[in-house]
Length: 512
Image (cartoon, rainbow, N blue to C red; front, top):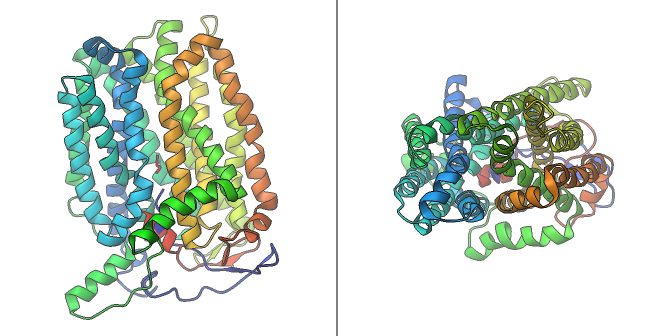
């Protein structure tokens, strides 16, 4: 999700042709990149410092993602304590996601003004305070408000992780590092039902929030000494310490209120109706995340009704989801390594065409269709419970592979400002759809039965198989015709600079 990222690859495209012309990496505008030989450049840090910064970003994102799904484990308790329906109780999940949906819009500007570290170290403690408030709530209204603001203030941690990874790791392995950073959100969300089922059975729903608070505190203690990774802030900080002035190029996220609104609000909305590439990718990711988050409602319900699973037994089913996420990281990395070798990109200064990043999405698109029909038609008493559970693992593998391939492609599909706007739209929209579907999934399952409910999504997913194929074939032409196009990348091997300001400044969250 981070749109203030630091590795765009400068190449150029003739405005009248879809065939790009390769161009050697040129020095970026002052402040958008640091000198490659600068010892303060995060990409020149010792490996131990890079791993520490990445680990802190991962821990913060894990804590917030854990908090997203934590309350789903205690929904039955919430219903009984506050005398509300299941749909109302699910608002504890949906309102948290609604709060997070603001993060892609606001975080780039916070990151540009203050750097990454202060945003991390302020965001997570406020998130933790609202999680504590949720756990102490004596009315559902108080619980709902606290859950919303926990998402609102925790959301930047899910957004910043992309910028942090882009700051410190080379764009030579964009798919690989994006798949690793996505693990924080996917595994964080999956671990909540796995761990908290035991806590709710032993205590009550409030412990879903207390344990989230403990995890957030542990992450904060790990991150107290996290170094600043945002190159523009590093340059500003060095100038302040030395007493020298530094002139930075204008931030791609904007500097005036109008410019900021233009980049992360007005332009994204315009792209939602005018950019074919962005429209296709956004719709696919909305389907992806909507189905992904409904599993946290439907899986425990279906396993309880069909197989008489207890709360902690249903939680154990999410081990399959965690395994699926890990396998996606492995397969995405293997595919990227293979395509780099096939394109002769054996050093850190060259990179395969961005269309080749779509291979992981192509594989995932097939798995998504298969898994939805698989789960829909095997979750029944006559079939062993392990069969649909494995199907959810396949879905998660597919979901993360699609996310990794499509978002990695968009990273370099447009110039910095266009990419920032596109990523903002895709991140906010997929989170909003993730907030919506869990509210109606139980009604769908009860109304048309689970087999047909998931088949509906399977048929839509089957149509979406075309998205990465169309982008692979026609993406360069579509982008060349875009008014947001300018220097961009397409077919052919390219020299790399640093992912431009769109990765630096945002800070698809992944995330979630």
